Length: 147
Image (tube, rainbow, N blue to C red; front, side):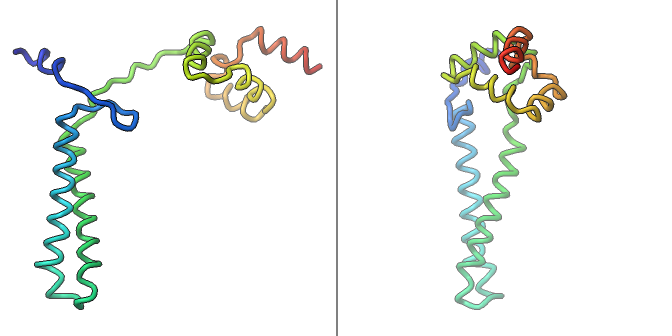
């Protein structure tokens, strides 16, 4: 099996709106849990009984467990790089309307709120995406209605 076929055969799952490789997710969870427990147990059994009062051992051990979680986060960040690529394309007014319809949002309400707020309209013009929301004909008709 070639490398490309192996990449294509991976099973992806969706977790909290993100798509991940299932095996990588399991390894990531395992690494984080193990490092957290190692930090907690090392603090409780090895490090803190010698240097802090007995009533504070659990608290400091918990902090060391949290440090283990953060270490796990860093390890996982370096082990598993993002696999997605973002292809940015300029959207047209029609494409944006289709997206709003799929999301069951009201595009006319969005346009009205932009036209009624000059600060938002000006910021959108500065950023260069005002025309994606407001077509020239819509803007002219709304200006006539306001007069």
